[in-house]
Length: 172
Image (cartoon, rainbow, N blue to C red; front, side, top):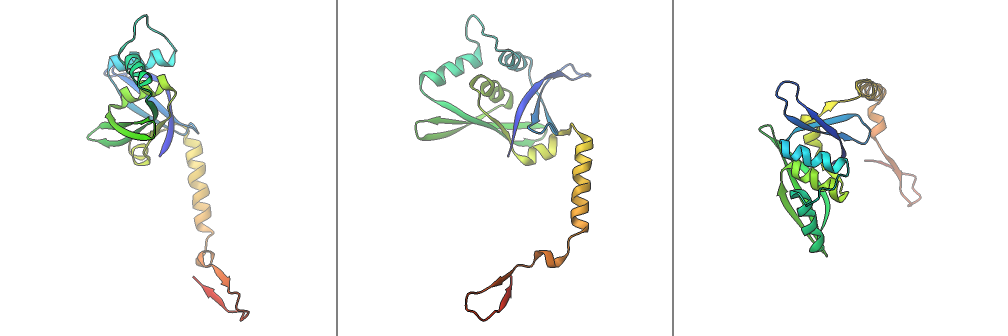
Protein backbone atom coordinates (compact mmCIF):
# COMPACT_ATOMS: atom_id res chain seq x y z
CA UNK A 1 0.00 0.00 0.00
CA UNK A 2 1.05 3.57 -0.64
CA UNK A 3 0.23 6.41 1.73
CA UNK A 4 -1.16 9.41 -0.08
CA UNK A 5 -2.20 12.95 0.83
CA UNK A 6 -4.92 15.16 -0.59
CA UNK A 7 -3.28 17.60 -3.00
CA UNK A 8 -6.53 19.45 -3.64
CA UNK A 9 -9.74 19.56 -5.62
CA UNK A 10 -9.79 20.26 -9.36
CA UNK A 11 -12.53 20.53 -11.95
CA UNK A 12 -12.58 18.40 -15.09
CA UNK A 13 -12.24 20.85 -17.96
CA UNK A 14 -14.85 19.12 -20.14
CA UNK A 15 -17.51 18.06 -17.64
CA UNK A 16 -16.85 20.55 -14.80
CA UNK A 17 -17.04 17.56 -12.43
CA UNK A 18 -14.95 17.83 -9.27
CA UNK A 19 -11.90 15.60 -8.88
CA UNK A 20 -10.05 14.97 -5.64
CA UNK A 21 -6.36 14.63 -6.36
CA UNK A 22 -4.23 12.40 -4.12
CA UNK A 23 -0.41 12.49 -4.25
CA UNK A 24 2.19 10.10 -2.93
CA UNK A 25 4.81 11.27 -0.43
CA UNK A 26 7.46 11.66 -3.12
CA UNK A 27 5.19 13.76 -5.33
CA UNK A 28 5.83 11.25 -8.10
CA UNK A 29 2.30 9.93 -8.69
CA UNK A 30 -1.12 11.58 -8.56
CA UNK A 31 -4.38 9.70 -8.30
CA UNK A 32 -7.44 11.59 -9.63
CA UNK A 33 -10.83 10.44 -8.32
CA UNK A 34 -14.06 11.93 -9.64
CA UNK A 35 -16.41 12.88 -6.81
CA UNK A 36 -19.73 14.63 -6.27
CA UNK A 37 -20.22 18.34 -5.64
CA UNK A 38 -21.26 17.83 -1.99
CA UNK A 39 -18.24 15.67 -1.22
CA UNK A 40 -15.97 18.22 -2.93
CA UNK A 41 -17.37 20.99 -0.70
CA UNK A 42 -16.88 18.79 2.36
CA UNK A 43 -13.27 17.99 1.45
CA UNK A 44 -12.52 21.65 0.73
CA UNK A 45 -13.99 22.73 4.07
CA UNK A 46 -11.80 20.14 5.84
CA UNK A 47 -8.69 21.24 3.91
CA UNK A 48 -9.39 24.86 4.86
CA UNK A 49 -10.28 23.92 8.48
CA UNK A 50 -13.68 25.58 8.15
CA UNK A 51 -16.10 24.93 10.99
CA UNK A 52 -19.77 25.24 10.01
CA UNK A 53 -22.18 26.74 12.55
CA UNK A 54 -23.99 23.39 12.68
CA UNK A 55 -22.42 19.99 11.92
CA UNK A 56 -22.68 18.88 8.32
CA UNK A 57 -22.80 15.17 7.46
CA UNK A 58 -19.09 14.37 7.79
CA UNK A 59 -18.77 16.53 10.90
CA UNK A 60 -21.74 14.67 12.40
CA UNK A 61 -20.10 11.33 11.62
CA UNK A 62 -16.90 12.44 13.37
CA UNK A 63 -18.97 13.60 16.38
CA UNK A 64 -20.64 10.18 16.58
CA UNK A 65 -17.29 8.39 16.37
CA UNK A 66 -15.88 10.57 19.14
CA UNK A 67 -18.96 10.17 21.36
CA UNK A 68 -18.67 6.38 21.19
CA UNK A 69 -14.86 6.45 21.52
CA UNK A 70 -14.30 4.99 18.06
CA UNK A 71 -11.20 6.10 16.18
CA UNK A 72 -10.57 6.06 12.47
CA UNK A 73 -7.20 4.31 12.17
CA UNK A 74 -6.94 4.81 8.41
CA UNK A 75 -8.82 4.60 5.16
CA UNK A 76 -7.84 2.28 2.35
CA UNK A 77 -8.76 2.77 -1.29
CA UNK A 78 -8.46 -0.85 -2.31
CA UNK A 79 -10.11 -1.48 -5.67
CA UNK A 80 -10.79 0.14 -9.03
CA UNK A 81 -13.48 -1.71 -10.95
CA UNK A 82 -15.40 -0.42 -13.98
CA UNK A 83 -14.06 3.11 -13.36
CA UNK A 84 -15.35 3.05 -9.77
CA UNK A 85 -13.05 3.28 -6.77
CA UNK A 86 -13.83 1.33 -3.59
CA UNK A 87 -12.65 2.17 -0.08
CA UNK A 88 -12.97 1.01 3.51
CA UNK A 89 -12.79 2.75 6.84
CA UNK A 90 -10.61 0.96 9.40
CA UNK A 91 -12.29 1.77 12.72
CA UNK A 92 -11.02 0.92 16.20
CA UNK A 93 -13.14 0.65 19.35
CA UNK A 94 -10.92 -0.46 22.18
CA UNK A 95 -9.21 -3.62 20.96
CA UNK A 96 -11.83 -4.32 18.29
CA UNK A 97 -10.96 -3.38 14.72
CA UNK A 98 -13.81 -3.07 12.21
CA UNK A 99 -13.79 -2.49 8.48
CA UNK A 100 -16.66 -0.49 6.96
CA UNK A 101 -17.32 -0.09 3.23
CA UNK A 102 -17.31 3.56 2.11
CA UNK A 103 -17.12 5.72 -0.97
CA UNK A 104 -13.59 7.11 -1.33
CA UNK A 105 -14.88 10.69 -1.23
CA UNK A 106 -16.64 10.14 2.11
CA UNK A 107 -13.66 8.23 3.48
CA UNK A 108 -11.30 11.06 2.46
CA UNK A 109 -13.58 13.69 4.03
CA UNK A 110 -13.54 11.73 7.31
CA UNK A 111 -9.79 11.09 7.15
CA UNK A 112 -9.12 14.82 6.77
CA UNK A 113 -11.32 15.64 9.77
CA UNK A 114 -9.66 13.03 11.99
CA UNK A 115 -6.07 13.41 10.71
CA UNK A 116 -6.15 9.76 9.68
CA UNK A 117 -3.83 8.38 6.99
CA UNK A 118 -5.06 7.67 3.47
CA UNK A 119 -3.68 4.46 1.96
CA UNK A 120 -4.11 3.24 -1.60
CA UNK A 121 -3.38 -0.29 -2.79
CA UNK A 122 -0.43 -0.41 -5.17
CA UNK A 123 -2.53 -2.03 -7.94
CA UNK A 124 -4.93 0.92 -7.84
CA UNK A 125 -2.07 3.41 -8.04
CA UNK A 126 -0.53 1.44 -10.92
CA UNK A 127 -3.85 1.30 -12.80
CA UNK A 128 -5.18 4.82 -12.26
CA UNK A 129 -2.42 7.23 -11.28
CA UNK A 130 -0.80 9.79 -13.51
CA UNK A 131 2.89 10.70 -13.40
CA UNK A 132 3.72 14.02 -11.79
CA UNK A 133 7.51 13.98 -12.20
CA UNK A 134 8.29 12.37 -15.57
CA UNK A 135 12.00 13.21 -15.36
CA UNK A 136 12.37 11.36 -12.03
CA UNK A 137 10.41 8.41 -13.45
CA UNK A 138 12.73 8.21 -16.47
CA UNK A 139 15.83 8.50 -14.26
CA UNK A 140 14.52 5.65 -12.10
CA UNK A 141 13.85 3.51 -15.19
CA UNK A 142 17.35 4.21 -16.52
CA UNK A 143 18.94 3.33 -13.15
CA UNK A 144 17.01 0.02 -13.16
CA UNK A 145 18.11 -0.72 -16.76
CA UNK A 146 21.73 -0.03 -15.77
CA UNK A 147 21.43 -2.31 -12.74
CA UNK A 148 19.92 -5.14 -14.80
CA UNK A 149 22.50 -4.82 -17.57
CA UNK A 150 25.37 -5.14 -15.06
CA UNK A 151 24.05 -8.13 -13.13
CA UNK A 152 25.24 -11.69 -13.65
CA UNK A 153 23.87 -15.07 -12.51
CA UNK A 154 26.76 -15.37 -10.05
CA UNK A 155 25.36 -12.36 -8.18
CA UNK A 156 22.42 -14.55 -7.10
CA UNK A 157 24.48 -17.41 -5.68
CA UNK A 158 25.09 -17.39 -1.95
CA UNK A 159 28.11 -19.22 -0.61
CA UNK A 160 28.06 -20.44 2.99
CA UNK A 161 30.71 -22.26 4.96
CA UNK A 162 29.64 -24.77 7.57
CA UNK A 163 31.21 -24.94 11.03
CA UNK A 164 32.35 -28.57 10.55
CA UNK A 165 35.82 -27.38 9.74
CA UNK A 166 35.80 -29.29 6.46
CA UNK A 167 35.93 -26.12 4.41
CA UNK A 168 33.09 -27.36 2.19
CA UNK A 169 31.11 -24.71 0.40
CA UNK A 170 27.44 -25.12 -0.38
CA UNK A 171 25.64 -23.17 -3.06
CA UNK A 172 21.99 -22.38 -2.54
